[in-house]
Image (cartoon, rainbow over all chains, first blue to last red; front, side, top):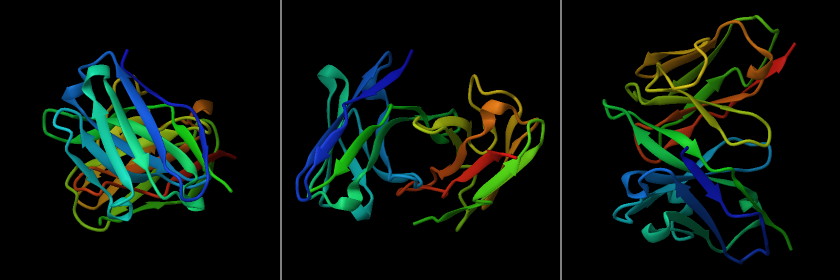
Length: 122
Length: 107
């Protein structure tokens, strides 16, 4: 059974950084992109960026460019998302999700991590 | 960026009802449209991909239609476990974007 298991909740001060991990199992890690999506309390879903788990190439939303770093360690099938210079409005649940494509090339997120709550508080 | 607009933002219905949620894209996205269900405290769950393909294990009372800019998610014969929030998602171009969500509540 495919699983994405994320690291635990974090509490950080404004200006600090947080690094969230996403460990994949029961599939070939390098065969799929991993995306990061966040959800502020009571709000909708916001796409942050994605990493090519094979090459390590990344793309991120313009809003997060310069603050977000996505990496992966293929030896342990784990993706990471680091967000720096944290602000109060970065308080959210952060999800990783696996992107799959069907035979026609339509992409979707078929598996999600359980989410990691990051709280930014002074 | 492609804007995704869902309607309604909330909806009250009864068990057994048929409901339809609409999602409109700010430009054509072909069939690069996915639907997810999210329950409180849980991660989103994929229901429909490529506008109309049912994800494995999802009940057949869920269906999706549309292409271009206008899409619908229909749930036939609502069940108690269907009361949740639903999001559309375009995977046509980066940055990927989501609709704001539709909260389906019990009447």
